[in-house]
Length: 157
Image (cartoon, rainbow, N blue to C red; front, side, top):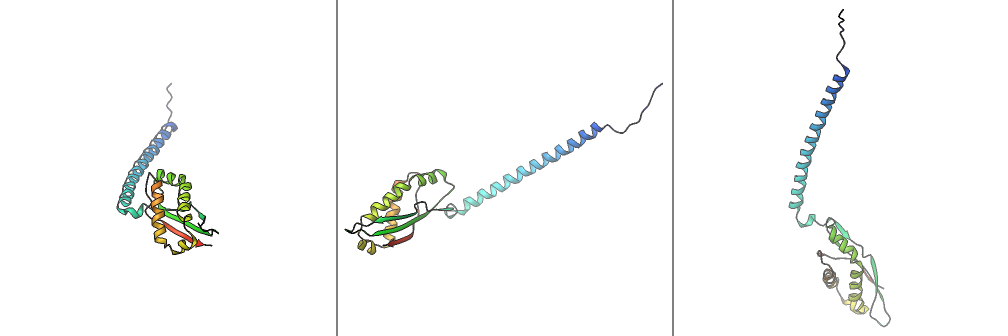
């Protein structure tokens, strides 16, 4: 005697079809996400190129801190000076060179300004000091150049 059983579709087949649908949806999401990311990356690169030089300066290097320099007077007075300058944070080798040159920057500043008497420092204008320090700082650097220098504090005590 032959027995005929009617049973619902196999559970394994339903699970298999469900997993295929999920895999197809995931593949579609990955493809769309990749295309979207490539398009956005191309737009961002175009903006950076068209932004020009002003977009390159993203940070201000103020690692020199406040320096106290004795003047060349018989009774030395103290010059307090604080210097900062813009630089491109994305240029990692140049950023590392700046950080490693702190001692040389401080030394160049002390040598230049410490050679003056208090009276001579009063007579100096900040534009002259700025140009000379910028020249001395750039002579120390090899991987880049400082374009501008800001004297944040300049006080003679």
